[in-house]
Length: 464
RNA sequence: GUCCCCAUCGUCUAGAGGCCUAGGACACCUCCCUUUCACGGAGGCGACCGGGGUUCGAAUCCCCGUGGGGACGCCA
Image (cartoon, rainbow, N blue to C red; front, side, top):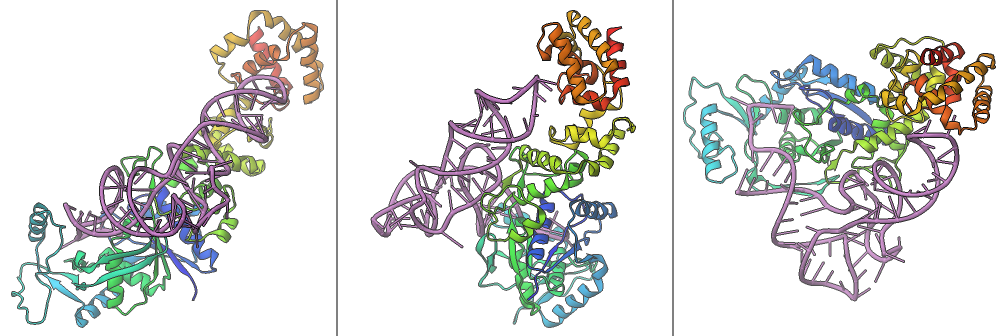
């Protein structure tokens, strides 16, 4: 049987890190087994779903490179089909009308909670043999409920958590269609997973409690039950639950913050899943290795430091020419226009082994394209009066130098020897004058890229 | 409250009864490299939640406890 997995977000916000990992695992599982990965937008909550959120999810998927074989399907466009199935269930007696008002339900819940009971529908409109139902009140438009089995257990072998068993007594007759006729989440999922031929449902473990209800409905429809794999949640860096109020950010924020999708993907792959001691691997390798057996059933705390480490790794690996477009855009955001004088790819080459994010890279190289503001503390420490004559002497040598890093190095060596100094004594003030700060790559290489005119101009503007 | 789930270094994890004196990675510390800062290299620190079983033998299996999380919507 061909593997078919799906990612089914509701468009009520951006694609966050947890959703991204769920999507990644579903995607990888399909790839691994040569199956299909389907994107389904669960937009039946009309009040909260927005087209912007749909776009945000699509953008996130695209940035990560999670492509889908089918979809996106929109549940709102499948209303007719849901209604047909509901009618079928009504006809077959596996669903029924319930005329409870919201107020009545609220009151019921309150009493149960006060009594220390689990709040659930008491089945007052559930038809039974020999049970006499009251006449339907005219003023209340009914909802439709699923007639859940009342005894026995629903048991499934969760591909991540192992066997899970929930008693039907714990479940109540859930609403599958609202008073206005629109079907609800648990029902749409059932119909869609069934009709889309989903073989493995890989989703967040906040759905564990929905699973027995869905299995019961699947049974009522005579559908095949897919396998389920419930992924544990991802906690924030501080170990706290991620929420809109606390720490949850769009995956696109990582783009914004200077992370490469390769790094985010690799990081997410290792969060809750492992393949022995492997830490760094491509998505192709991941798809070959991926399995549900090695997913941790416990929640995982996000670790930005490790993500940064991976990001640094992928930045080092990245082709500098390839990064030019991205870095140009990031520089523009800082108000820095790239010129062709120092070749940007060459500048990136010089810096990409030293940074953890593309933003860091961008900030570090800005001085190549605009005069840097000089760090006062660094200037005070290194750019002392006694060194200025030495620098003036260096300027003289530099003017005649062939502009290669070796020649520049020789020039510095020459003044260093002549004045009986250590190399850093001259290199440090040069750094401060040229880059604004006391840390940079080899100063001669910086000077090569900066160009003779610019180097002399920056030095002389300080000396004069 | 009820039900469900989870539990190895600070963090992500390896571990399917003897391979465990518990391995790797991030972070941290030390040293090396060095023209500063990084990068890189070599070391170091650091964990099986507690208690009972089962077994010749348990991080691994079972039970109880404790702690954490999730779910209990005409949200998804």
